Image (cartoon, rainbow, N blue to C red; front, side, top):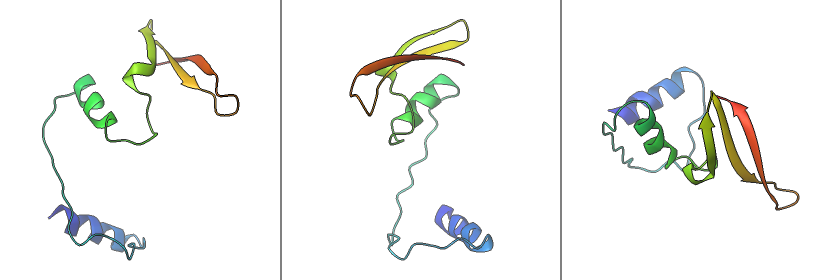
Length: 83
């Protein structure tokens, strides 16, 4: 049912459906909670889109500090953002 609705919505908006789309999809939906538990669960399935829990250094006073590896130098850096 999800696949049919998803592909129908793509067609309705004029988006192209890839020719190499798999014949079957596996959609596993389960309730994992709300807020932080849900974010932690979803973050495991995103590739290079989020900051790993291991890289979060601090989360205090509406600021998040995390570490990352700078692409050009290969050095570990930290950054703090409002959040």
